[in-house]
Image: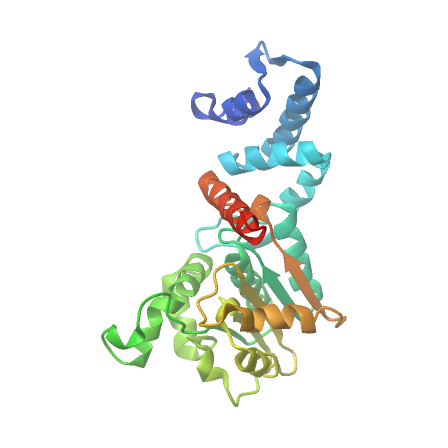
Length: 312
């Protein structure tokens, strides 16, 4: 019954997602779950419930996103793959929470970061590109595989001007680096973060600060790489030193450069795709782990741009 309570969720919110998506009735009585409706939909619902129960049995807490994603896997016939996600703990956060990949796309991304020296993650907002990269960096740092974590991103304005922000250069670029700070706070805790920053074990800086350096024994993350120019991307890629790994993340639908066609990320994804020790992972809206509306927004924009390209 404990598993059934977790499966159904508060006010049956988890099962309601199945009911509404598949048009079935789901009832729990006497330790049994009964599903009724059209045969094909009952089969899908049963497979989804079995997959969700496997997650519950492993101690996973179900969310709206995990239930919707399970339905996607059922439609693809891949619901058995959900167990591979539940097994793989990337790292433990400062609050003791185990962090795991939530989609098969995220699992592919994490595996690539483990196996390759350079990993490029390209996809829409909310797919965990930056968050998972920071988690893998913290994991490598804790295992003493690297001595430093270096996080950088280009300071490109999204409709605003840096010069109007108060303070010195560091104060001006800090808002652009805030997502990186937030991820590290969650992984390490605020006190440990500041301690490592003071020791030089963690460095967060604009991309321009990377020029002329050789980065040895470091885990380097370039975030918002869609806003790099050709020259900046090449400069970053050639900073890699001995014993280092690099992760490059970006969303090619959110380019703030004057000429979007010249994004360094778009060019790099074409130039580097045949190099053996470099992996390029592409996310889709199915890998979005934020609010369900984010998936719908991404789909709507893709449909709009597709129609415009066709001349409608």
